[in-house]
Image (cartoon, rainbow, N blue to C red; front, side, top):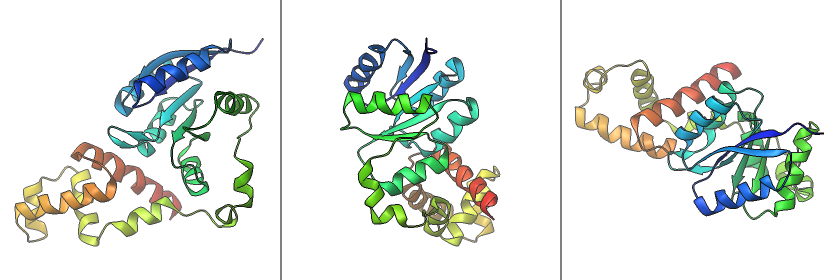
Length: 218
């Protein structure tokens, strides 16, 4: 008899989340231990339950799921993370796999496709659409999300984020680059847009993630 896999679901749509739970629990070897709509609460569920499988929406209230993939793998290294997304393409798949995900599935996929993907993970296999094999993107070298990220931020924006991560106050940063305190707020608004975040804490988390990856690649 197969081991019963413990599952955590993170989905911004409650109805969809409940539907996924019902699909999974029709299988005798899958048990949903927790459900939530936010990445922050998802981290707590992963920490508590150490699940075998995490199904997570790519778009969360806090922003994209990227930083949560890494944090969840740090909390529970054996957990498989499957990302549910409307952006079903090779480039995103390769990006997510680079962050530690075990698979990606379109939100329009059928229940049988979801179960097939999970069954493959049990056997140590990753499932992808056959159409991807003929895609021009499949043959291209994977884009580095780290390089893209670093290019997006200007030199001044990078300096500001480095200092914020170090715990330096906004007033101190303003004096260091000889601008007004209000200018720092303007810089931060632009940085938040580029990082796809909405708060200082999220910006620090996302910047620190890519900064660590950049050091690994260098």
